[in-house]
Image 1 (tube, rainbow, N blue to C red):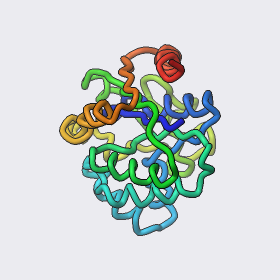
Image 2 (cartoon, rainbow, N blue to C red):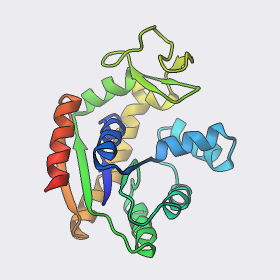
Image 3 (cartoon, helix red, strand yellow):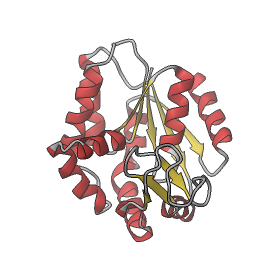
Image 4 (cartoon, rainbow, N blue to C red):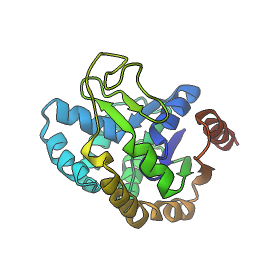
Length: 215
């Protein structure tokens, strides 16, 4: 099964995507993680993509498509996939459809997570990331044991430029303009589209997602 997680920044796609992939015994593919790894490893694609991310803008389609294609094509054709953060635009969805078609696969379920803007700004504004292992915390909801220090590796936690409140609101505007039309696209493509209210506990959201995906 190929599942796509769709939703605005800060809605919980990463957390829920990982949990869903574990429950499905599937591969979780987060483009944000792939891009950060590319930047950390000094790959040119990562450097170019980070310039857009820091400004709160979407990474150009072709950069993302090339990265995801490379990962998906190396996977077993029967392996389950949970895509988190891709596609973000209709053109990316069309490109993904082409990649999957080459592998005799298709998008089966689209999970749309939704929450109010103020909730999302608080979530992202409180987010802190480890520069060494990419572990993510939130000072309001999931703080580290020691302020500013990663529990996993002891690295220093920082606020990413794209999590600054002003940048977050711009990212939400970009999402509404360029990503929300994905819902209409997948409806037209006859994929199963499930809308989930994300302003609940992690367990409640995961249960709602699992119920929808299992139907």
